[in-house]
Length: 182
Image (cartoon, rainbow, N blue to C red; front, top):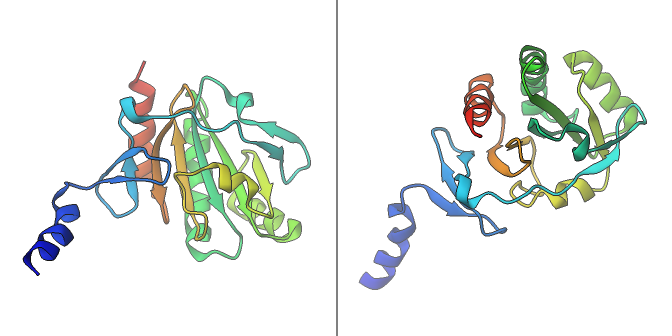
């Protein structure tokens, strides 16, 4: 019985480091769901590509050399409704820096998604992902349950994630740190 208790307590004593299904060491920071990935543990993000809500083609290579904030959302998701205007404001504030935003819309109708984006003021590309194919490529994010946000460094390595509703302070902190990296 004692050995079981010790083993059960061992993960709690590891100081907040967890391993994702992709095997990356992730350092949890502050609030639950807010994590940074150490430079030595970062892996390249997949080259996401697809069609935007506006019907144009987009590929992650289109924003090469920039820190990229990828946000997964749906119009019917209440936390998404709260965070999307925040992300739209941040995109405008950070547009003069080498920071780009990309949305991935999950399981929405085009009409609902288009109305929702218009209501938030977001100007950045919004990829359509009705069947979860794009999300499946982002192995550090949950495959069910939104919102979630993945932040890539300038070399498009996965550098941080937020599972759940993201705040302006979280994004600004992470982006600022990544812009200072070489």
